[in-house]
Amino acid sequence: LCSLGDIGTDWQLCRRGDIGTDWQLCSLGDIGTDWQLCRRGDIGTDWQLCRRGDIGTDWQLCRRGDIGTDWQLCRRGDIGTDWQLCSLGDIGTDWQLCRRGDIGTDWQLCRRGDIGTDWQLCSLGDIGTDWQLCRRGDIGTDWQLCRRGDIGTDWQLCRRGDIGTDWQLCRRGDIGTDWQLCRRGDIGTDWQLCGRGCMCICQHSPQYKQTAVSPG
Image 1 (cartoon, rainbow, N blue to C red):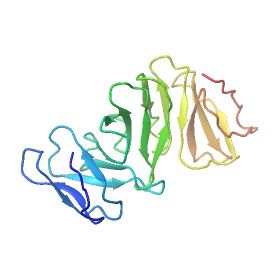
Image 2: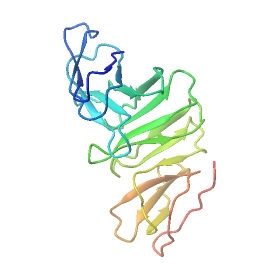
Image 3: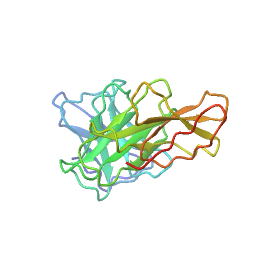
């Protein structure tokens, strides 16, 4: 951990040397002076610092180039040093899951939308270590489904923004019985995923049969 102490607000994180432990401070912008970098492994020199966006300046993500596999967590304040970022692999570079140590009870989802800077933190509650993030692929990067292990009964929806009242709920079919699809109006262009167990604002439409979403 490198403490930024009282050196001012215009510092950012970088490194020198080839052993990955000799960190220096450069400009972070306006995020404050009490930032620390939690890193793991040999991350090299191509790390970037990403802002979490408009929901506060407390969280930052460091990522290695465009690879998106070696994510690190920069923290500010009192969350402790036992938080880490877990790479979700084939679902793209924008989504990562943060977990606190090995206890697995305090999961948080850090996600980034299409605009790059719109990071959000979704609390999943006390759900244990068997939650994972799933992605449909062709519906965009904003929506994701979290499911608990292989059970498929306790689905939760992590969504970005307000979808309004003109969304409908329908079945997708080929990804199992617990998955649902939200469709906006009649245009069929803004498809979103819903899950069994989530509260979703959906509207019945003559074109689609609304499928009941029961709690997990």
